[in-house]
Image (tube, rainbow, N blue to C red; front, side):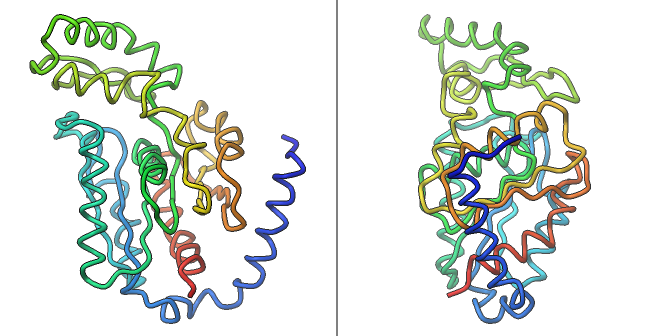
Length: 272
């Protein structure tokens, strides 16, 4: 794919920054104050903190960072038990707790749906960097919106009937797994799955200007996500330290494959 002149200039600026920092990445942790760096890590759809993102979280901790490996509302246990904005607040609470322990630089990282949510969060709150890893699960993805259209329509009708807060059986959808049952309220369901809502691909262009992004796109990602990676990346606000990183990995193992690169990137961004 041909890049626009503006994007080419962006890559050139990025190369100069990386060249300047490259020789100093190893000792950068101590220079930046590792304990003063905090990272929130979020798992993917139906996942949990101890699966697929645990190697990433452990690697970040070994680098000296404070890490909050959170169980988010889209986990296999929680089934979207809170509204979307409450999930945003959960991240803020984790970052505030780290700030109370001396953290000065904060980053949000997420795998798959967690990556989409990391981007969504960075559109609302200032952070020092965002690490979406194989981001997906956005409600406007065609495979998801098509599979869940009937459930979204039913949620709308129940809300119109005054039953928006009743616990109801709906479905979620994941590309490799298909559709599966979840139980939540129609009001909460519509917040998460409305293809015209907030949890959509719009999050890429809504990242706050001045926020660097390490977009991890594994070489063996799901075809749909691989197809969209260039468009999504080119939608991000320009920043000299924003990068597209493609580890040799599949979708599920991308967090582990990107762990060491994530440490280096965070260290470089966190330089005083």
